[in-house]
Image 1: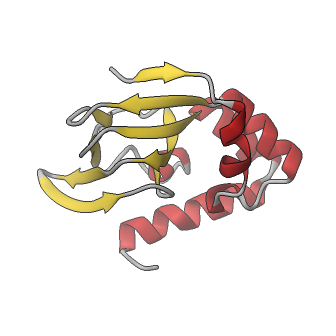
Image 2: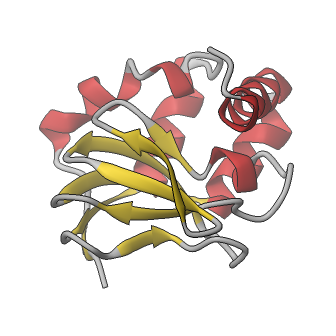
Image 3: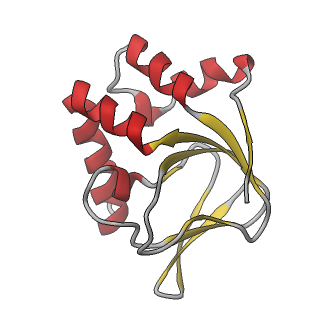
Length: 140
C-alpha cells in the first residue's frame, strides 16, 4: 500500500507546469491539483496492475518505475513521466503493470477528477489520448 498525503504547498508550482497539464487553463489545473494526493510507493509495489481497474493518473516526481506487459519489461518511467494515461483516456484498461523500481513519489490524480477535467476541457482529453497512443505505439 502506498503512503498517501496531501500535496505540500511548495510542490504546487512544480506540478502546475508539467506537460500533462498544459492543455488545462490555470483555474482547471489548480482544481485538479487540489483533488490530487501525494502517493509514495516503496520498491516492488504496484502502482497500476495490468488488466485491472486503475483509479489514478500518476505524475512521477521522484524515483523510477518499470512498466511490465505480459511479464516482459516494456519501459522505465522516471520523474516527470506519467502513468495511467491509457486507462484515463478511455482507450483500454491498463495494458501494463507499473511497479516501483525504487521508492517512487508521485502525484495521484483521481480518475473522477480526470474525467471531469476531460469533460470540461476536451483539448485536455485529446492531449491525454495522444500521450496514450504515443505510449502504445512507442512514438515520441
